[in-house]
Amino acid sequence: MNYLFIVPKDNMYGMMTIPPGIVYVASALKESGRNVFGIHLNFEDDADAAIRQSMLEHDIDVVCTGGLSDQYLEIKKIIRIIREVKADAVTVVGGGLITSEPEVALAGVEADIGIVGQGEISICEVADALETKRELHDIDGLALNDSGQVTKTALRYDIKDIDCICFPDYSIFNYKQVPNDPVYINGKLKKSLNVTASRSCPYNCTFCYHPSGSRYVQRSIKNIFQEIDLMLKSYAIEHISVIDELFATNKERVFEFSERIKSYGLTYGVQLRVDSISEEILMSLKDSGCIAISYGIESADNNILSSMRKRITIKQIEEALVLTKKVGIFIQGNFIFGDIEETVESANRTLRWWMNHLDYGLNLYMIRVFPGSYLYKYALEKGIINDRLSYLENGCPPINVSRLSESEMKALRDKIIYLNSEMVGATYGIQVSRITDDGAYDLTAECMNCGALNSFNNTKFEYKNVTGADSFSCGHCFQKMRVSPANTVSKGTYKTILDNVLEQHFLAFAKQGKKIVIWGVTEKSTALLMSSKSLRDAVVAVVDRDYKVKNWTFLNRYRIESPDVLQELSFDSLIIGAAGYEKQISDQVSAMGLNVDILDI
Image (cartoon, rainbow, N blue to C red; front, side, top):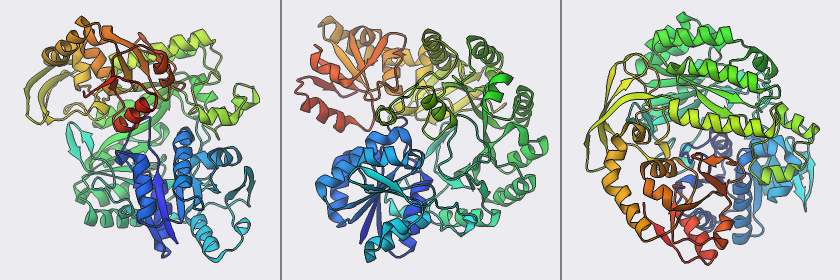
């Protein structure tokens, strides 16, 4: 039998990273001797055609896919296409979507088999059963769909020794960017690799869900470096992201890792808890090439931290950030608002702390309530979510589980959107000295934190990254800087560059009274709207497929609406802001019977 693994489109971020979970499962099946193929729909211009071609080209018998709960619709669409190509193909779905809500999700996407929890062993046993026509009900860790009636088999226990799992085989997904899309580090593209150093987490934060199981286990340092050595033979890796939520819980393990990786000449980033670090650990990381640390911070209010079950305090957060800044490692961290105990007062306490510590470059977000988490169970119990399937179908939209009123929640959401865009990584005096023929910039920018003047040469900005600050940091104090073109709008540089291009272009539209719609609430759309007043005046609607998730006012001006409104709207031209979805959206516009110009911008 021939097996096809499909990574669904990631509509929220459009990342080209292949999620480690699906690679591990596909690799385990390939190692067992099966014919295994893979496609990642974010890499494909026409996802529908790519699926059909792969199915026919490789004579596929079994299709495996999966993802997180907010990818429900993408996964359901994949299953529909499979049925159209080959009605009797067996469909298998896994990941957080199935593990958190097996009965609801499996019946909803109309797949045959769901893998609950870790999948490396389960997928091989499923393949054995399919090939020998044995009973699937005897296999642990499955959900089985019989015409909409879903039954679960016995629980499969987590793998205790993850060193025994085969290394991820990225050649299954035959793309030149594999294993990851290159990442920008201070404006330089670096070929990157995710290395999974552990599974799960022993903590139970209320907003978290661990589809990889409840047992926290770490790989041995020896095993990790065996994988790194193997990957370096196949790919010119320059940067590694270490996936381990508790990387520094064992300081001797940190020292061993640091000593081993030093000779590789790689840069890398890690995840740490603020209560597990010391200056000694940070210096060891810094000296061996660590350039970024991601901390789970979440709030600057001790009552909220307690409610979230974070088991950390503001004092520990402050001590960790001070030490990290002192050592000179880039800090990545978030505050998330909307906990069960969140009030206007608690949210403002966190915002005041954030405003007083802008130099850390921490991001602000609203809590998302995902199936499987404590918050999700709370929302079900309180009747905040009353239809589990509709919640998945709507992309797990923002809901209010806090003590804030709906008007207070909206005001808070609008506030953090504004503060994120205006304040995170705020940078002084951006000056562009050169733009190359292929669109790279030479520019200088002054760090808000220490005042150092930084030069970033031959730096490229992609539309999907123009409002992100994560890739740039000060060469002196290593704190976050926003040096992308979207930020220079407020400083004048990017607007000056675009005035003679986009502004004049859209001014002509305005003079003709033409009306424009933007499809996609993205960084590209943000940059275009911020750069041209004429465009802002001409836009009559902003639509997005995920309008229920993005249910806020875009740039405090445009209400985000469903694409369905276009059939009732009078407009002349469409700008597609969702990179990678141009053909899909164009086809949808045609299917609606709309006769409009799609602007190539």
